[in-house]
Length: 420
Image 1 (tube, one colour):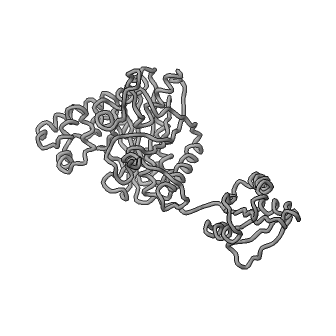
Image 2 (cartoon, one colour):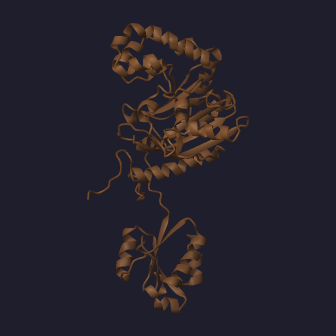
């Protein structure tokens, strides 16, 4: 019988503590990004990984690549069309509508796995992890500054180099429609020069052509109309203000060809790119989506959000192995284990900044000490028959050869451990 293997583009993630390992980096990145969100007073929301497939068709657009090519969908036993969530925002808005909370303001964050059927490559997988924030119920203005501030905090916290935050404004719904029509009129004479994918975009979603990776299309677009000529002055003022206020913290660039891949975006949009990621250089993006709530059957609710692909992000961060101090508790004979576990339980309650490891396998004192050194432990606590009779243990430093091991009472052990 053939071995069963993981599916293409779906990884097993195992934290071995080595920050050169993508899995270990990913876990650390998740913790630190979560702390940033909490620092901005965002509340966590968790939504199901399975949703009604219509949620994503109605939100991201039937002409988008996600719906046409990338969504994982199937019918259940009741013949209901279900989908694995390909992104987080639609589920958050569905939850707000279902709870009838559209008239309140919310600052929410989420983190979890998403699924898209795309070609696996560096930093891109069919099951991937995404973290995001949503500011709901507050019109354009203040939320844009908070969003850029969060991105700057992420870039600064991880000490990222060679990053640019690109910003743009798509104007009102009417501005966007007028610009799309002007773009179609401009591109029609060049239709045969566009590749098949861009020809399809021209028919169904012309704004997405601005995000084309084709060098031929990019060359044609050099003389295309600019969204700048279709939006009002206040939209341009917002872009200039954001750039002026935050340019001393991060590299911010106004890019009037910037669009986002999902149909629900309107108004202010942004993305963060890194030259270290190659052609697919975006690792974070988002924008305003004031019409999505009403589009999904709820009341009108202004909203802006951001999402970050954690695998792609982990590719560009460098993290140090900031491991906690490790103490190995070595039991010389198995009959002492009940007492030892009681002592260990009390030690863990005294100092949660220390990792306490008890060997669960049989072996000699020598082999257990060898394992403690291999695990890079700072100290070994040794408990044998003689120590137990004397109500004591031996503490042996493993990283400082000048310090000798010493026998101490159980009470002194607790004081020592608490002070580590």
